[in-house]
Image (cartoon, rainbow, N blue to C red):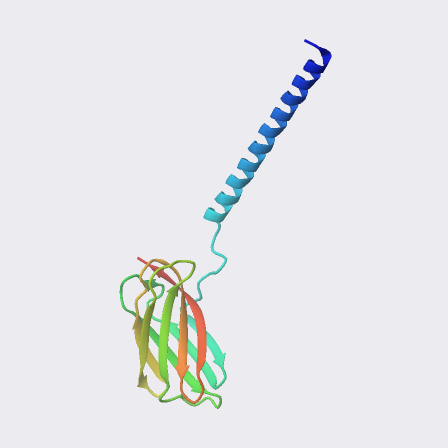
Length: 154
């Protein structure tokens, strides 16, 4: 075997070892990234049972009774609306859309009924356990949309 053949064989061996280590590093990094994505806690957490919101025409207190919400059951939503002067906001048309965050699960839409001056109730049904986004649409003198998150469990 000539000196050139020996040098060529050593170069190929070194390149092969380098390629093996590079492949090992890439596969290892990919495995760590995948594990981190699967095991990470959600970047978005659920709001508490009662939340407070301001909108163009006033103030909203949004309560989900018996929280966290129960999957595939009617969960009572109670919303209290006041105008900018603190008086009950009467006669508004309210609708809520429930959407599961980061999932292609079915949405659930429902309307709320005024049960006393400025107090509206309705029942929402989350379809799966997990984190949901609830978006309230207020139709009245001016339309407003307000969102919050909620947790649903079995």
